Amino acid sequence: MVHTRRSVRKYDPNKPLDPEKVRQCIELATLAPNSSNMQLWEFYHICEEDKLKKLSEYCFNQNAASSAQQMVIMVVRKDLWRRRVKSQINYLKSIYGEKPTKEYSKRAKFAFTYYGKVIPFSYADFLGIFGYVRFTLYWLIGLFKPIYRQGRNSDMRIVAHKSLALAAQTFMLAMTNINYDTCPMEGIDTLRIKKLLHLPYGAEINMVVSCGIRLPEGVYGDRFRVPFDEVYKNI
Ligand SMILES: Cc1cc2nc3c(=O)[nH]c(=O)nc-3n(C[C@H](O)[C@H](O)[C@H](O)COP(=O)(O)O)c2cc1C
Image (tube, rainbow, N blue to C red; front, top):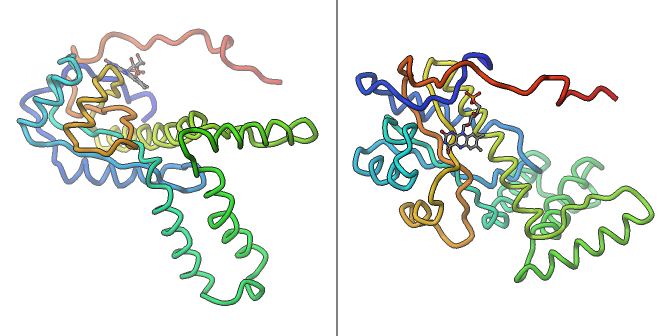
């Protein structure tokens, strides 16, 4: 599957995709590993012709976009962290029951503290100021022991984008598994796409993945990778 997946730049116009099958691949993408299981993502599945046309324009009409049968927009929703914390706490209550804190097991107590205190401490921000306070605090503690360093708002944005990139890859591999092809794209106008989707200020476009079935000329040659020895370090 890993060998079969290629970035495809020209899809067969005579081979449409079943939107339901693509939807199922998006559902599989939500099973990707993600930071603190916060699931700070949304997936916008575009199938309508007029929307695809508009979206292709916002992907600069590059080949992978202009011939796409469907597209999926990967959207980071770091701004939904409070909602996700609520979902996590509700889930914890559903498995551990609602009772006084002292009656919970050690593991349950840890989970409630993690989502009730640690996560809000990590995600809360006001104009980037809390982020720098966290960053400085972590740095000071880090003088004495190993410590998590991702304190600033920009660090937390990377955290969220990292997880969504794993979901995007999971989606693309799920598509490969059913002989559907894809191409991830970051050569896009993220601001216009945000407007097209009526997304709020805090949402961010991670990438657009075009979908279709490859034409032979849609794969631009053999794969090129730098020698493995250059990137593999066994220490
Ligand atoms: C984050 C990301 C952004 C990419 N953006 C584009 C893009 O805008 N247009 C494009 O044609 N390919 C894009 N690609 C595809 C890469 O060029 C491609 O993955 C790389 O050349 C390796 O080829 P392969 O995917 O066939 O192994 C992108 C890939 C990634 C991971």
